[in-house]
Image 1 (cartoon, rainbow over the protein chains, first blue to last red):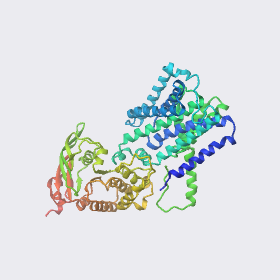
Image 2: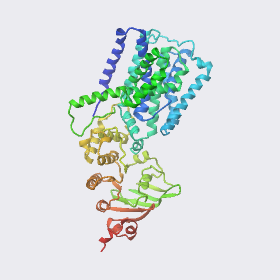
Image 3: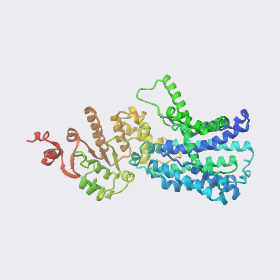
Image 4: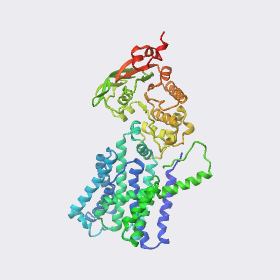
Length: 332
Length: 251
């Protein structure tokens, strides 16, 4: 059986962070660091949604709720209440957890499509609230006036280099925590519920409680993605809470691969790249994107990373003869 | 000890279980037989908490467990395997058993450590050895043969160290040879674990060979009960279910 250790994974995470931190020396352009920041925000967001879709089998169509909520709660706390970044971060996480607990308590007992649609409804509720509550949210104009970024423990987020490092660190730490979670007994319980919720309940597992916990965890990390994007744009817009954000996260998971932990991150980077490249060439971005999604849905069902991992596995298993009757686990 | 008192369950106008009372002494091995639609699986669903009975009581030792939800019934010591193997197809055999052990020991929501927990390893190995799945421990459950999937389903229930084990047609869909092998395994488990075992079975040769006691259900009612010998001679059973094949053995 595949075993993983916390120590080894922490080393890998530290190495990844060091590489990310060093990249601007190779690619000094602002557009590159902007890309990494956006990919971090959407990478965390899509990975958190995959905790629900890929690991627990809960297809949420409304995960953008937490992206928008994270962005607005974080930006508003800093702008209106002048809290420090750390306090705003912690409070925003708390708000996301609370809202996820309430929405989850209503949604997680529902079966498949009803769960999907109700999560979507809650997201649109937040969207409508943002549009309507103009005095606080700025309505459809978004939050105007910028988000102040007071220095905190020597971190000055108005310095682009600091912001870059902060986003990279948040990405690596968030992914490390989520990876740890899916490798824990809790993570395996999620897989059991995905495969066969009925059997899980006949093993004594309170399925709805585990689903609710997964929903809250996904809500928290989804919110962290939103916080990063509001830091990046120094504002918050209703679009962050619109249903298309949820759709993009689903696309990212599809593009990168649902069965690989890093699939959604790869998918996020891929979709953002596509976005940047295609809009440079043509106005018909949606059309091109639609064709690409179609190709993935028909030919590359496991996503790009899933496809690559499968090829690597085939390649190695062709060379290493396995004892008969055993097969490698294709999900992790 | 498991005791069912005047249990009743209907779906719309259809009465699935009609005033059924049964008593299963601790450590007994009982077969439940009956024609299709007699209410055998419904009975299991009621006892295991999948359905809530309309009326009646189900005592496990001294506690009335009727109406409890499935996870709560399981926690009190009633394990169950299904007619169609109910397993976790993307987990390996060992992972699935470890997951069941985590569920049993309330470790299933832990996230302070990595899966698998060391403390569960020996227990998992023991369960796998007991049912003979050790050679395929690292195979994906979904890639197992039909027979091994049924065995794994039972192993998942065994991981919960049940006092009462309900097996819904453990030999369903198996070839003749595989059936006997399966029943040998089940019989060994029963002997070693000293649990109360109740199984549903259609193959009369198997029933008469392995069961200590037999309950015959028909149209949701208990038609007959007793030792294999008594049931075999019961005229009602012969008429409703067995036909004349077993009748021939009468003196």
